Image 1 (cartoon, rainbow, N blue to C red):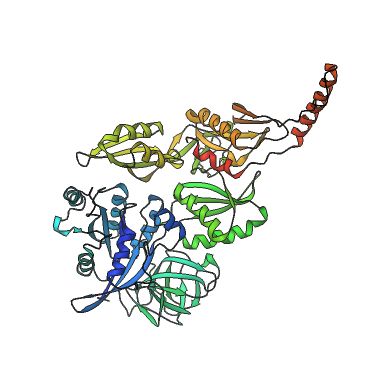
Image 2: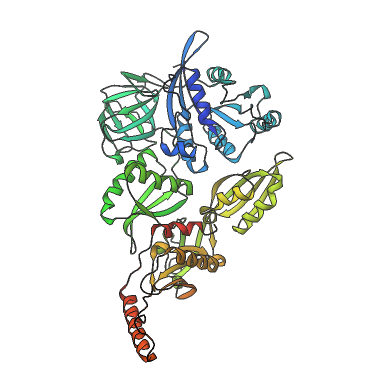
Length: 598
């Protein structure tokens, strides 16, 4: 065990984690020249296209140091705030972390929040100053920032360039010297933490685990504590670039397990594995429950595909444990699921993955957050509102509370005014302003989570020319003046387009939604009124004009009454059509509501 090192790489988005992982794999000979490629651990097409890491990936390497061979288990993590749950799971399986900071961009919001996650888990932190070969790099100043943040010595920070391979050997040596070997007892009963799982259509569920105590052997009978079910370990092994089967995996090591489980629900990330005959009494702690921030409905375009969508969602949940979903139904869209996401990027990625990996075409409704409603009859009973249609009748309602967050924004001093006005527009209240250096400012705001759901992140990047970084933590519920805005098409409410909005913004948003829908809904044979309403009060209206056939074309001159008769006849037909006609809403219309400010 003293030759094992488990570590992860944490950093803000785009600070070079995946490139550094590529260089570490090259340096330890874990990949052959033929297998080399950029972003080697990012094996999803989506990750490569967008240049971001979505999943944490585990891989094993071997490194010779002073004549002895060490086994490294590296877990590469995402940097985007929407995937912080992946980071927390990787951290739970490690003893050390490489904290990568970009020498040109310095410390950003996600660097700090991931660092605190690592410190809470007592990880040994190795600071790495990356991209020092860039012309815009500022190593001296950024080194001072890291020293202030970590309280370490300047010589503890390893200058490196993942692109050119500079400093890679120093990093590998530091991992051996500074990261503690895993603690654990090989003779104790088996106790292993499940930190990830994937679905393989040929072999069932593959479970990734880290052994805390004891040993796991091929063919052994294994028990999953959360579900209480037992299985035989058909195959165990370590995670090289390809899976490497082994006979036994001991305490401190990381590996995979195949038991032939076909049901996705039977494996829970964060669960403890143990031996069926000699079970451990302790469950592995240190796992946080996922807290969804944004809720949206996902419906199959074809209602017959509901069961296929359910199984696709279950398989996806295996691979992405932060996805939460419950069945729901909508008058406009039929049966579907109410899903909880960690943010808008997460929602977008899940929708893309459903379409690419499972060939599902889905409709996503307007995202919203979870509110608490209280009625006058039972003012102490919380009614959770995840969907605008769950909101009780306003005449019985006492109050509605919405979730608030503490937002931390780090930006350049030049953009403070722009960032402040954006946050105040989003109903934020500034609580603190700290100058980290003469150039960089940290602003803290208390603001409603609902306001950052749609386009906050994109607009923040725009007003700060890409120099602001953003992170948030929930701080509880606060009473708020919210109203439900309904959209009526041809006098019929479309429940999938309803939204809960703050009373001050309701008129503006209702008007914008009507205008947007007018552009997107195709014209029919009859007039379609689009209305936004709060309760029974209509606050905005747009009309899509009917397509008309020129019925008077065959009348050349002559008496006006004949033309009028034909037009009246047409008018009656249109009226009748409008009563029986229903309006098809295209998929873009549901998505366009999210982009009202564009």
